[in-house]
Image (cartoon, rainbow, N blue to C red; front, side, top):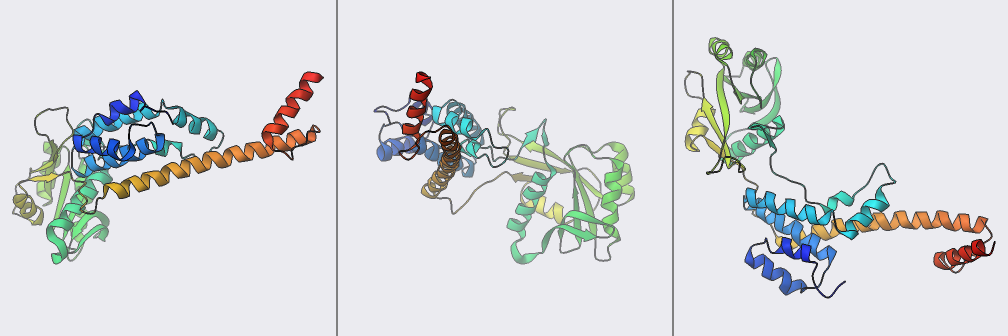
Length: 312
């Protein structure tokens, strides 16, 4: 541990909110410590996420990861763990982006869209209605259903005619009253089929504050078929057509997050240490086979071996 903080660590810490920056120095002082830096930054990144500071979160974790991958301690773990194919954990020292992934104005994964709507339905309806995922209805399994009477099919890209037919198949369930298809884009031909089959359709688009390259605040849903109101319409009317991204956690505790991160660091260190011990054990066997006394430990045995080699 050096007497002054690593200047690269300092650059990352200076990106923090003044309160968290001052707390870091108050608690840990200005001495360089890889473990405290890593654990504190992990906790701070989580804080930004639960506060929905999505752009600041991205900038912070990019800066942090850029510093850590160049750190000698990280490189040490990386080097020592490279020989094992499975179970490497040194990358856990980095901060993974936990936001919903977006590519070219589409959700990258359909499951993210499903999770978002499902969570918001649970928050909105509470115990008033039964919200389920992947429920078998009619001739298929809907992404989301409400009371077994309303089914949603989700597509993250441009919908196809088969998507309408898939959604329509849920209506063959005796309890189903309405079925809906949500997609990034729905063509006029698909809409004609949907209206003929009485499938309600919605487009989704991302909502941003101002800058077009910033991370979205949420998702806007727009009904593109002409039909009577349904449960999803009622929900959209109450939320203004927008579902906000949120990672809010009322139980978030900065110190607990730090503790979790310290446990991660300990597991990484433990694995690296175990691998080193196994290497030393193998080397001791080799040294013994070469007539070297290993009773006084590896370093002594290694020196004895070097003396033997130099004298030969």
